[in-house]
Length: 412
Image (cartoon, rainbow, N blue to C red; front, side):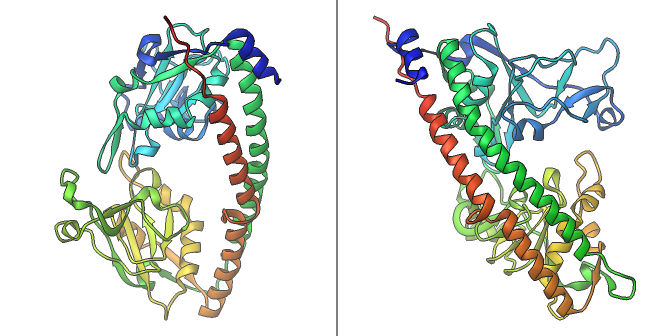
């Protein structure tokens, strides 16, 4: 019998108690009343949406800052708080959790697009247990049911209060944490190695895309495009516009990849009654709005897009479309810095006027081939490290869901 089985047999042989979140804690929002200027030269640590989304255990060693005035009343995070993302363009990404698992004397301020759940009794759940629990399949399923929308989904805090969680004894929680942390550590080691390989790839990509003055002709992206396309979003309240057979790409799917399918599809009626339009395969697609602004992708199938994508059909007599994709991907940080307004959005004019070096077509093809091979080594989930990481992740998820499934105690 394992140590975990012994603890369960000793401490909760008849099952564990389950409670709704609304019975054992309260929900709070993030920062209020802040302008864009408050996030320039700030004086207090600021927890971003991306931080919450990316880390089951919140990263508090951050450079992000927000300006907080003396005496200003804003809620701060505490040890044990469970933070959730409040909205997303897909229901699967709503309510992603992150937990404050370390104690700190510094004030931590949360972005306004996330919210917090705080236990009334901080002693009923280990924060490290919560970081696994709230990302488990069962909890993700319950959280997903609290989100509603068509093109953008928002979590209902009222419905979140009805989510039910198990409350096993603390020693049981601690042993589960030990087991799952070991699985997670193995995955983290492989991920660190993959990150190093990707940095190496980015270095060589930068080297390959650096040219002498006499090697290239400088043009604009519009100058090497045969045609440019934008798109549109069918009316969200028209359910007959969604669920058809026409692939419809949204900006969150533009992730420096080849796109063979889209998460959403629209109907011919939607295409007829919106600005969405077909674009041919093998365009270079650049996101121009929101958190994904500046990211690029290639569509390997004909598809339609929303209005936040700028699509370039490359003139193949002037440029190799994969070379253009690698150049634009390499320019991501510079492109992103050109964003304007509160959301740092780009626009089609910025994209079209962006410069690109044009060596001979033969050299473009050679560069694209080398970079495609590098990219496959770093990002192909069917081989190499990405495949091993994916296998480890599935193993962790299997044991996480198995260990976090408890018999519910029954009362007479």
